[in-house]
Image 1 (cartoon, chains in turn red, brown):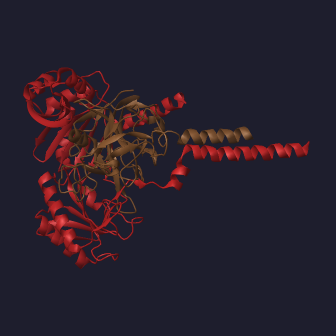
Image 2: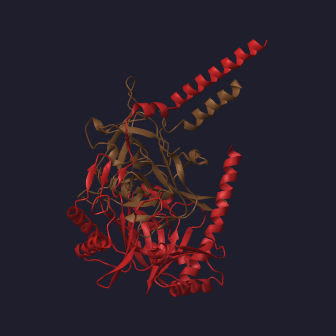
Image 3: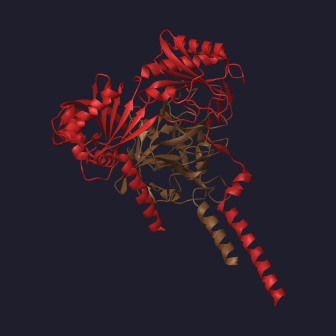
Length: 357
Length: 249
């Protein structure tokens, strides 16, 4: 059994290693083209891609039965220190370090500090100086140190830089077992243009002595922000009331508007219920709903996704006590059922044997 | 012949044993029963309060009540006689309805403070074909950390589900606390998986570099035909309740 588990783990880890050694390009800008929109509407110069889902089985939209367009390119394996040094050499010395602070009284807090460094060996001290807090390698060490010293202790999340049309992150493994102080998890280059992303990658490659580092490259239409997110949510709340589609259910709610995004990366993706009950909206109705939403939000970024689903809202993943189901679920019941089957089979077997004798 | 049937019976017992049984110590993913309406859910992330107190788990707030008899937690379910399977109580300052909740800081998360049982901090990875191991950390800020190398969950309904390949987290602004959605094709969950632990395994070389807490299962959408599973972010809930990961045996 242990052998099987080890073999499985090895296979999985090997396949994941191969994956981690490539450049994975995720094109969030092309998300609106993964499926043909029903129509594209212009709202004061902003393009909204509208998809009307008629049934979930066959539909293809940015959120239904598709994935973010992805391309893989081969890269060279690199260890954490090489990667970190190449990153600092190519994009430093002024960088932003994101950390998590573990509070002695419990809980976690994010913080960002500016540092100026020329190599990985300077990084730890530079972060500690800027923070005024000790830096541990990872979550486990920071947690133990916070208990021991009764003072806040941080661990590194990422190193980042924002340049024109791009943001670059070097993420550290927050909970790792490696021996290095900074254990790099992955390099992420976000850019609004392909050329810009590959220009940054070339800079890092040059700093790494000509070897291409494994990386995730996100081609993004724009970056989102929390204030815009809040405006979209408030618009969703108001429009839901106007449409009158919301119905509270014992296990959740239906008829709501969803407001989604890939973290701080665009596009914003909105999901509307059918405004007129069970019939999919025609173009005029769909346009009216989207225009009203944008008017209420005061936010529209190009491109934006608007999908109309036959059902929206959520359902809690809970269940009430159902004695029949619970009985069937219990191992005791299953064991009893199997035992009865075993005894019956054995009885038939013995009976047949006696008759033969 | 009868040996084969008995073997089958034993296999059935072994496969289904555990998450839905009375367990001591209790561990992530086990079945719990709480709330005045009697909800069946799963245990999530093992935690402890740094300020002192008992070990416990982050569970879904909608699986328990903030006060009254409905904040007692039974494991696996309330039963007449003996200790009624009583296994502690909850501290619930969260919300049952993260969509409607006017206080946007409230997560659909609560703490099950375990009593009458021991607590194991090990994630029962045996249900995923691996060896049980403790968590080694927590996934970072969901707004910048979009990609995970893998994603898994363990809950009392669907046991271990997930994928060993890259998954993108979709941040969902609509709900209070901090919620993300993952396609159900990557992370299957069903009723009674609520509260179940969601984690990411980072492989490096031929070994595992880390098992990081992602969050707990809270819901699925759309109604009646889930395309996405909703996860309450672990990091947010831990900060909200001032608790840290428990990684003990």
